[in-house]
Image 1 (tube, helix red, strand yellow):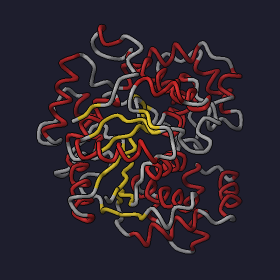
Image 2 (cartoon, helix red, strand yellow):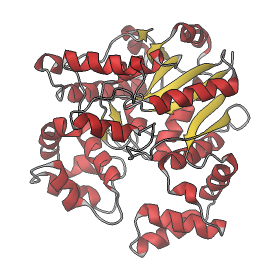
Image 3 (tube, rainbow, N blue to C red):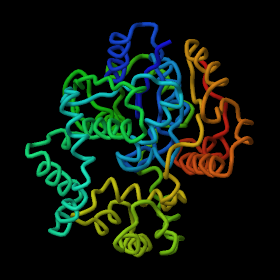
Length: 397
């Protein structure tokens, strides 16, 4: 039973994702099992997910994924490095022998060399020098890495390549190089914010939905059916603007001490965010006034949502403390049976399983519950804004 792990957000699940899964099966054989570490109700760019995690997991399972596990909030809404660390650990604990990921460059050797360069101990000093010159973190890291490699490193300029590099670094850091084999799939279609081509990106599809257009022809029929179902029920799709008031109201009640606890808080930025959040009339104004050359907007958004959701900088230390099942196919249930006997982490497949978690696990789970409750406030239908809906059983498809 060969098991291949995939890290994803499926926000929403589209034709490019379906192609990726098909190519993994082509490479490994139709009998291979595909396991996904899926971001929960908030995603890495610092936004609520378009559909809740259960709907997105069900779409993935109906479109070819065998088992979908939740990547808990502290790792799902984090930097590329922390996101990758959480995904790799979760998938390894689920028995993955392969790690399948998309890449713009599609060259495993290039990605490996870039990952090795980023692990060079001299890198941090060169980055600090760049930051001291007023460069953004991304620009400072790019320059530092290229100085060490003595060659251009284009893989640090493309979002999927950046994640691919971090996956490889995480595999190496966790001592999994002999047990988790990387499987690089060249990405096709529009770039991550592009609408062009036969395979538009997830961001392009979210913008299309926000503009009132449908996704017919851009997502698999099963994914479209679930999207239509969620829309009819008033559970989605949900856009960042739908939770803006909830976010700002929460931020205005927090103190500088609360902001000081969040991930990425440094150099007084937390005080700046706290001060501006008390008066900003909307999120765009807050980000515009708080923004600096050093900090990208996605990082600022993550910090704001981290503050609102009560995340602390040590919540993502180490690796996820449990395996929570969101959806499984008939084939995936065979793997679930094996994990129930041999998984190195607690397996949560029923609501009552949460009671067996230790203190760290319970806190992690509670953060996800609170995030789901807050996200629900943005649902189009008032009846769907009820809290306490996170402890559901997985979708079996």
